[in-house]
Image 1: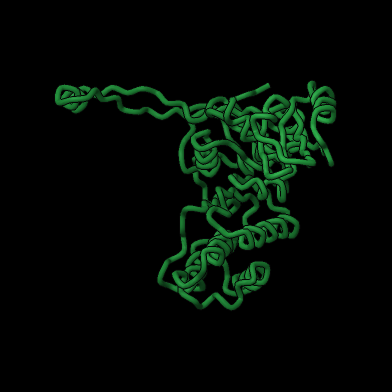
Image 2 (image 1 turned 90 degrees about the vertical axis):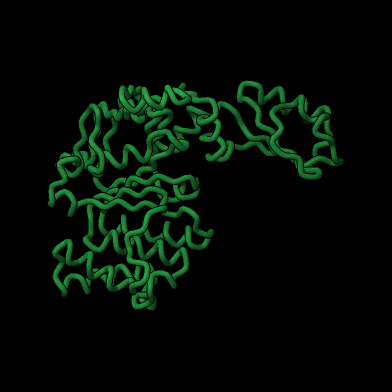
Length: 327
């Protein structure tokens, strides 16, 4: 049975409209008018217990609005949501015990206090006994390698350590459902890898369900077997990563090593030129034209080596976002 069920979910915001000038300001003050701006439009999906699902979309696509509705922070305009058997916007105490929301650009830990003090406050809020708190703290600090940082003020932690500390604070009540909004935002490569490894281990150890948004495709490819793709408030794809490539990438990446350098002007006729680095050239070629294009390349250029591969997943999704393609 699904732990998250979303059906025909929509959110529309009323936005005040004001004409320029003094007359427009006065009219706006006494007779305000509004226009409706849809943020999420008829989105439906289900997530099973223990799944790790990537939630992708460009800025303004509706990802964060959807997460806020799933966690009960805002009320949907239409549609229905069930998370762990609860209606989120009712904000029942039992529901809040089962979920957590981590936003990479937001902070819940108290800046000038040691991390341990903030964690004790969270434990008190969730009614966790001292014995259970110590047990969970030991497990999570070991998984996050934060044992030596518990008594340091949060402001003295590195950015990566602060993000780990935020995860620790968000998970001390051991939620069943994790909503993660850009948890690796701004972190260096090593810190990103560390956070990914922790989330993978947390999911394996506790069977937690994870809905993850990220602009770093490495987060998605490392953690998620399934992705939801949202564009302009509408869900345009729900499936695995391979299926995403099959549906939205009707082209292949052709990489050449040439015997001598060629100018971009000499190469543009063979396909979409993505990179020229000395004698290394990379094209994007539509799949139906691949055989003829490769034959032309071999016939007309001094080719030392040629490889054909699927384009990187981030390029595929970038192409979808640019075109708004849904087929």
